[in-house]
Length: 112
Length: 110
Image 1 (spheres, chains in turn blue, cyan):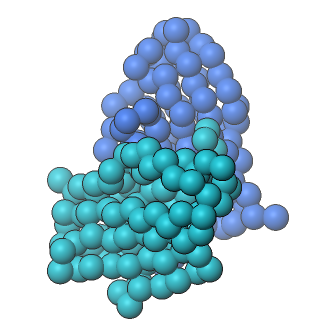
Image 2 (spheres, each protein chain N blue to C red):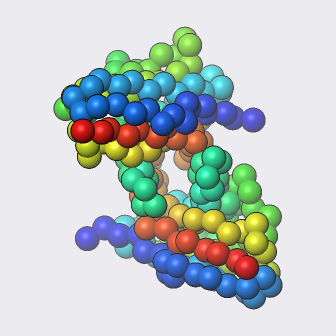
């Protein structure tokens, strides 16, 4: 079954405590990206990756890092989370030559 | 800056009604257009692509108007299960990086 998985699904943490949200896909897609979704603001792209070792900033990259060491994984790293990073985060994948995006189930992050 | 604008709604309609959403885009180089559906607190999922000639999938019809730079989604015979947020998505020509609208909320009531 084609899948995009994210872990954890829910996380409550405190300001400044480093965290990583994992994203994994089994569809061999080249393109992966991270979004955050906030009420009234819609989906905003944080980072994207066109392939292994190729990453680039999206619209709201401040406070986030990513890495793409393997094709299937694209973790999102918050080195020092702050309350304004409280949000719903989605990972998405896309095959080269196709425009359809497949989203993971989302990670709801609360930073206190 | 690329902009994709949608009326956030909510559109509150009775079962069986016909409802239409529009989405405008600012980048004339946009080439690919889509509607995604997002249920509350769930991930977005592709509803349908929007082709230049328009396309229909059951009760759903999508249209593109390049001259006026908007796309539309028409839902006929609304069902309770159509209640969701509908996201307009636009890709610039040759780019895999999409621009999402903020979504239009639809509530279908009995």
